[in-house]
Length: 418
Image (tube, rainbow, N blue to C red; front, side, top):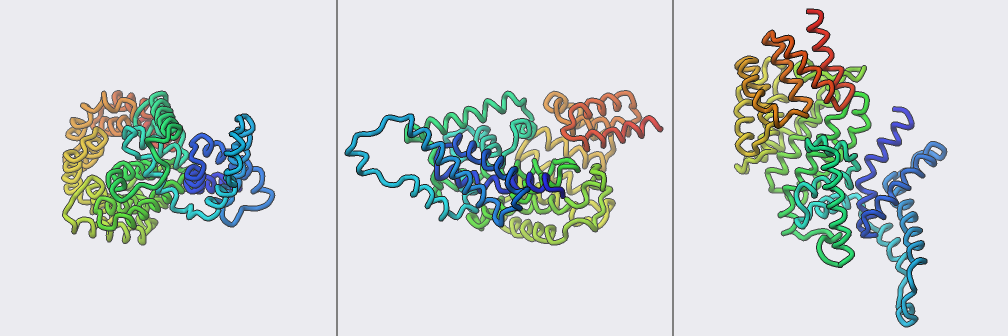
């Protein structure tokens, strides 16, 4: 990995810990973000010359702290002094802030921040969008793509959430920056789990040429799930979430070829799958199932486990996968779940049956790359070349990465040669 890419990857991986520490101690969202961005700019100037620090997150916190303190000083100069008797009782606030930062266990701050972002005073869509933006540093475009909404709509959600937190802090009421207690943690667990999985998916959906840099997101999401398991050791859905991510991430080394092109599941070299991750994921899933409290993450992990346990693509139990997706449609109805189920149906009952499931999803998934890609593939199998070509061209226009677009072009080239 070249120097620029390494620095970018390191900054992305350190962001959750660094920003969470700065936000917890300064209690000012905009100030913490500005301080972290300035620390990143200084890292880009300093690290290539002086070499990487031993602890990048600690370096960014220290530099960000100094930036934020400078900002606090500048603001103070523009504020009228309090009465003399009040000044005489004022302690060294800056020293207190610095001591809290230097002595904090900032590696766990990110989990605390997740629960803060998922405060019930914020609507659920704002909770997750804000956490993705603040904790993981995803762009508005990336978050909008994960939610299947426009960038403008997602920008509004994030802006509203930040404004609400700002007003609450200014008034001294509402969303706190302190860690929630046991009851509040349990109430917000679902939103936090959903946010963690969206962070994982953003890293997992990266293209071959950026997968190395975005892999940190997958690893961060798995780390957070393990932290959740420490807080909720008997919660089967958190076991299912961790198992799901481990089983999916275990395939990372086989998902792209040397040129960054996508390798579909059926064509992956299964010897490249991470056996240790698979074993951990399967063990967590088996433990979750014994609790007899099924949930969506456990069902998705069970689907991933069927793929992981199949020695070859031909050994995959597609009938069981179809049944599991049917269960997921009941638990968590979604056009994307139905689209995924159609893949299993195509394996079991052929492309015509799968297409009958896919076609009604057109309105809901008109802007979804995978919908048009799957629909085009099914039409191609049915010999409807013109319609297949239209579907593939639409998919290329919606591709989020060059690797996705190139994968669809392979289908088009195959049709032309045929």
